[in-house]
Length: 178
Length: 178
Image 1 (tube, each protein chain N blue to C red):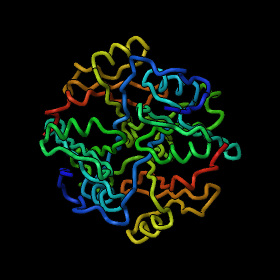
Image 2: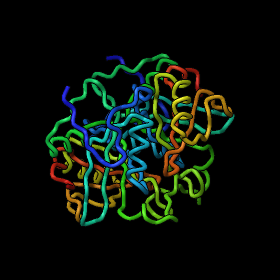
Image 3: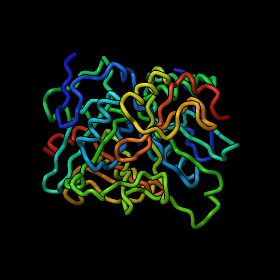
Image 4: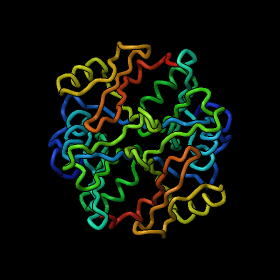
């Protein structure tokens, strides 16, 4: 294996033995209305709901989503599917605190206005032009189209909770930055 | 292939053709001090810096990190490595807006206090007990240890910017929720 990584102040020279096998499983955002969010992520971005975990005592439900590859084989047994889900890389977890969907005033903070912190998730797509047309067809709200602003070939849209989603086509990103 | 996914209100029955090949590439958070954040994620969580992209005109730098698998072969050529990076699943992107590290008062919002929104990222580890000891050895700040509270076998720690990181061991999650 030949693997090139970058040097920068702070970066470890070697992977510590104690961290071997650690993998980034998911990123979580809270959502107001699960039906609205699940409709959006499964229809617009082709994600599949791997696992729904309800916690009635604490009044919340967790939804784990990913885009499946043809080689993926997701187990039927619920506990096996839970283990499989937590063994994957790069899932999206949506947390629904029960009742928020019934409050017309309720809204989550997307992290891009003050106070800032979290930014976005990003999807890679096979064809950015086609994806832009698809988002238009689906009535998705655009923040930025591919040809807007300084960052060409980068699309930003909003999900139903107002979280930002970046959309790129990997091979068009060559030459970005320095 | 036998693949089981869950039904819930809103969930698409089939993947729309227009969304075929979409993949979740990364999740982004802003960080105050890149040296501090890179030290943490590469030392404590064994992540590797795949790509650093500087945008001097806009005064920010992007850092893309992942845990590499033995079968991963990361290209040496910078543009090829950019394309490779944006073709992966489930990376962590850290955004550094230049100068924030020099302001003692500056801090980002982690999304878990008001106003809420973003929650956390989560790592799966081979052994949760060993990971807890490792975090203690590395002086990582705990929010919750495996045996605290109602959610057993779930650890929460903070990164240097105060963002929450969940740590689980996949096979201990069987039976979680309902």
